Image 1 (cartoon, rainbow, N blue to C red):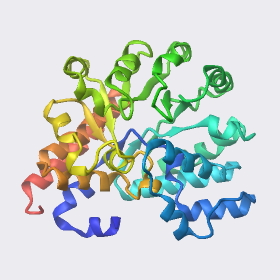
Image 2: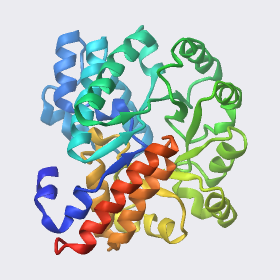
Image 3: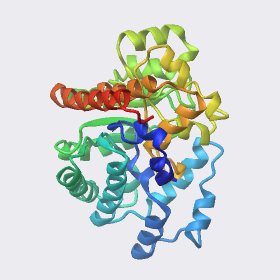
Image 4: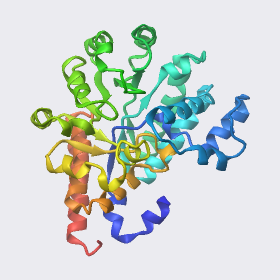
Length: 349
């Protein structure tokens, strides 16, 4: 499907646009073929007999139903080589999508609870990140997430181990099931993370209320909000997000498949853009949603009849919302400006 999109000349301004991805779960890039391969290698039983049967299972009615399958799939990741293969396969695809920089989440709790060491994850992923930079110039800032539906005590054990690997982690995040799991529970750990100079971000306002976004800002003191689509329920919050230039990492296809919105046409992305919020486009768990970053841009462009300038602005917002230093941001913004000029000056649609 991606190749069909790429071949469509009137979408070249999207497909060839330099991209930054800020909301991407590495475990969510586990394609069915790789899941089967690793399950066989590691003698891990999965309840599917074929890749096709597994793909058929990728139909979810809620975030919790999706997460059940997501964590079940993650059990096939056991060795350094597995984590390398997971990461490098995603980064190969990212390069095809003209991704220049990515800040991927990973979930240590999903693996350490199975006896996989932090070092195993780190060594495998780091090998892939270095290779991606050497081969394609893609930079990677990994963000370690805590599972919000688990206890603070469990998160603190993970944090204690992570302190031995701060050279690897750029930031910490908060993910997993949002319903009835407010961000405030993790105040202590986020305070410590900030003291260690880490960036902080949190999933908020996806299935949970706008108030969770406020909690993430006021209690966790996050630099960025992941999802955040419920902010429109609170006009004062929108004003604050706009004034403080808080980036919202929106994942349109994910929002439809997990029934945050009933259809792409009903998604509030256009209103978020009209409110002049620092919103950007991401793929979340692309293997499970069969949509990487380019497809997310294409779907909102078509469903909402967006202007090209809207797409370019979303692309720039991702650069501004990243944790890159000012020099690298300037370089990417310059590349983005050249891309815009080319498509405005040429006859290519």
